[in-house]
Image 1 (cartoon, rainbow, N blue to C red):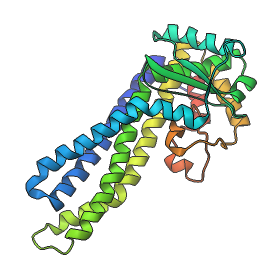
Image 2 (image 1 turned 30 degrees about the horizontal axis):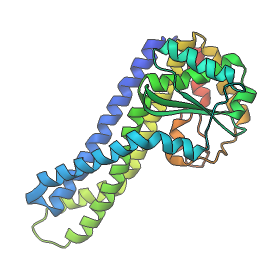
Image 3 (image 1 turned 45 degrees about the vertical axis):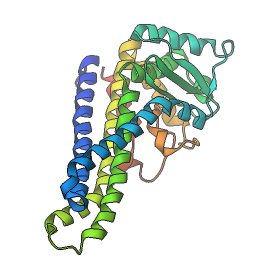
Image 4 (image 1 turned 90 degrees about the vertical axis):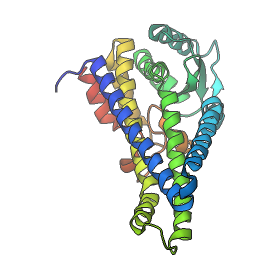
Length: 293
């Protein structure tokens, strides 16, 4: 297999993530325009401004308070300075290497091996690790996992994925509004029948497509964080070995909402739809990429 440099892997994933994000933004714009045409053709500009304000308010709320909600929802507790001294020291050391302030460290009581990062930026970030990870991973493996989460913070992945989640949520809201407007206007004369039909199809399939794109972006970000972790630790095998243990031990039964599952290093919930809407790449592929570095 062809060797891939850390920097090439990171650059490739960032580029693809931006392209996919542009697609979601275009989808939102198409939905807003169609609704404006159907309901308020003469006030379309005001409708567009109104939609932008709603999105901004939603983004502001998620951006500033999302981390507190996530930590509470997962039952994360502050790491004990004595019991979890190696964990805290590892987070601090890798944070210095990444050039960011050390995030707050939390522990989640769960037998599965997992971890996540949350926060609006490197100055306001937190990392949480499960007790299963602390119990089953050796030092180099734990460093690989922490490096992955530090990379999410340093690369501003948390902010990026928050904004994408906001856009996906807005697509769902706008799709519902468009379906309602279709019922109202489908019998009116003077409306462009082709546009109405196109809008109807858009309202049905936009939420599905946006969720698929969100999953694709999240998977790209996971590859990028894996590459960044290998760059930080200078030891790709540490994370690769940790991912192998996740494959062996985890059963995907953590009590975590699907809305925040994309934050974890490995999908905490397994379902029959994972192949379609999975927010994480297959662990086998991630391990293969890491060992090709």
